[in-house]
Structure formats: C-alpha cells, structure tokens
Image (cartoon, rainbow, N blue to C red; front, side):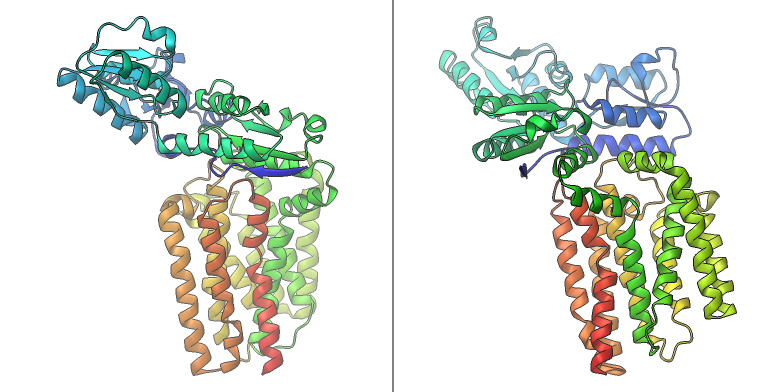
Length: 548
C-alpha cells in the first residue's frame, strides 16, 4: 500500500491563528478564558483546549468576567459589542479572510446593494457575514433557494470562504442569467481552493482516499464529497484509531487529505498508523524516536567530534557517557512533564504513560552507569557530570521552566555543548569547540519548530513559539551564517584541515529550506533529519583528523 499525501491539508492560516491566540491566552491570562462557541470544528482540538481550561462561554452563562476568543468563523458585530458591554476582554480570532468578506458585505449594503451570500445558511461564518449586510442580505445554498429570490437589480454576490468552487461558479452564473447586471466577487479562501484542487489531484491518482477531520466540519465534509464525486471510495476519520486498516490495505495507492480545522498531530498520527501497518521496521523506527535514540546518538556524535577536533584520541567511553546522560536528561524531563507532552504529542505521551515504570528504571540505571563510567575517566569529570545531570533533572520539577520565555531551547542546546566540552577534557586545542555552539543551537531550534508544527500546545518556554515561524526560520539561517563565518575564520587562521567540515553548514541550510516547506505527514523522516547533524559533524571531524 503506497500512501500519498495531499499537496495542501490541515490547518489553514485563519484556524491556526485562532488556535494560537487561544493557546497563548490559556497560558498567560489571569482571568478565565472562554471561546465564543466552538473555536474550530474539530473535537480533538477542542478537547486539548478544555485540558488547558478553555471553555465554551455558551456553556457558562453565569460568567461575568474573563477573556473571550472570537472563533475563526467570526460573529455578528452586535454580539461582539454585547460581550464588551458585559465587561469581557475580547480577543478577535476572526480569520482575516473572513473579516474581508464581512467588510465587503457591510460596504456594499451601505451603498444600497442587495448582498447575496452563496453558502450554508446554518454555518457560523455565513450567519456572521449576513449580520454585516444590515438587513440587505440573502443566503443561497442550492438551486431551491434560487426560486425564493426576489427580483434583483443592484446586487453583489459573495461567497462563504469555504464554499466549493464549482458550486459557487454554477450558482452565481445561474443568478446572473436570471437577473443580469449583478457583480460577482469570489471570496472563497485561497486555502480552500488549493485544498479542493489538491484532493481532486489525489483522486485522479489514488484508488481510495482517507479524509481526516471533524465530522461536524463543513470543509472536511466538502473534501470528502469532492472525492466521492470523482468516483473514489472515501473514509472520513477523526482519529488514527478509526482507520479500517485491513480494508485500506487492499488498495495499492491510498491518498490522505484533511480539513482546514484538522491539526497536524492528527494528520501525522493517521499517516504513521497507515505506514506502520504490517511494517515492523517502521514501528522500530518510531519506537527509536519515542525513546530519542537518534538524538542521543547525535549528541554522542558531537562529543566524539569534539574529542577529535580538540586533539584527543577517540575512545568509545566519552560518547557512551554522552549518550547515557542525554537519555537521562531528556527522558526524565519528559516523564516529569507527561501532562504537558500530551498537549503537543499525545501519542508519544500515551507511550510514556504505558511504559512509565520501565522507563523510570532505565533512566535511573543510565544515570548511574554514566557516573560509574565517568568515575573511571577521572574524579573531576565525575563531579561535574553529576552536577550537570542533577541540574538537568530539576528542569521539569522546579520553576526553571518559567524562568524566561524560550528558555527550554537554550537550556537543551547549552546542555549538549557543556556535556561535549566536559567529556573532551583536557583540551589540547579548545578553539574548535566554538563550532558546537551554533550547531547545537540550530539542532535544538529545528526540533523545537517540529513540535510547533504539530499545532498543539508547546508553551512559552519554546523559543520557536516565542519567535513565531518566520523569525524562527530566520534565526536558523543566522545560526548557519554565524557558524560558517566562525568556521572560516578558525580554518584560515588556525587549521586549514577544518575546512573539511565546511559542507556541514550547507547541509544544515538544505535541511532548513526543506523544513520551511512544511512537508505534511513526514514527522518521522523530519525528526531523523533533525537529529543527523551530530553524526555528520563526527564523520567530517573524523575525515579532518585523518587529513591532519
């Protein structure tokens, strides 16, 4: 069974914006946080918000204060004004593209036009747009509604932003043929257009399609409808557990798409479950990621590379100690923050919950073994690593997490660098260790961005969440440029053989540009790529040592 993922699927810009506004309010607001109706049409995303204490205001009519998030679909203006009069702090999460349609509806209504809205009369977005027409609006959902239209002269046709392109075209042309002279403004969101176009492309290549999303989501159901109209069997699921795997395995080529209110962690979960079915190697790769084994190998690679570049002989003990202490620090903190993890990567959190006892025993054992090996190296290394490990264990148990925004990414990269530096003692030439700083910071920020892309809750300790995607990618590129500059300076000023490592920065740039494309359903592949720089660094350091 070959799995193909739609060119565009999942959260659109407006939904992602509303969701992040709600997540930020849940973390920072001192008052209760509410949404004005369901924020988006996805039960799993709403459940995540409930875990953070964000409730639907309409279920708490007794509430008299708090922060209210207006959902992406928008609301009638009088309802927003009423919330402000009641004393609520209103955060407007209306999608900017929906807000544009609302503004057009108001503008044309005030200029004396009759405003025709092609869309679902019961949809929250359409109700909101209709309210902006100030009594001069009519909704057309199907051909039956055309028969009830009054004579039209001066009128404009708008659309619900998630309307089907073909339906809008057919209905608007029919209205024009009956009442010539009207204006047509296609206000279907580009994201909707691209998603509908993408599923048609998938349907042309695949025997069946899986559409991921809430059953109450209009745009999700519309995607499923389009696929059926293309003559394909469609399986609409909300979670990976709903997949009829045996039946799906009978198809040679299967397409996967998702509605605009479906978070990436659900899409990735569905894709991973499909790819892992009857594929034990895929399950092994996923298990290795859950245990962070590729990351620990990467940190071991940084340590071994640092050993080589500082002039020491390469022994397996130092990389092994780095591996064990990284396993201890990361796994211990994830076990301590499992509730937090469930808000970002619920399937990984469930794995940690199922195997908690085994993991706790393994973590403690890895720490003790690392200290035993460190003691055999020398007493100073033993003491410093014991202190470093103890400090790392405090992160999820104390207020270190809230010390300052974005601290987790900085602490993680600093931990890797300090660990590699300690295990490289005594240094014959400590200068090449400067290369570790931008490299480790880049890797930590890359992995941080991967978590942000899941569309869950990552918290203010995430540097990627603090900066936002655009600035985080800019910082990744700055780190690459800084690393390349320092590298050239060190190589030309001290050791020419360091130039052998220079392709590392081109490799990081390639990974950054690939991640910037936000490839869907490839979390496993992207995470393996993100943990590879340490091993690439070690390989190039080994080559440089051989040439010196």
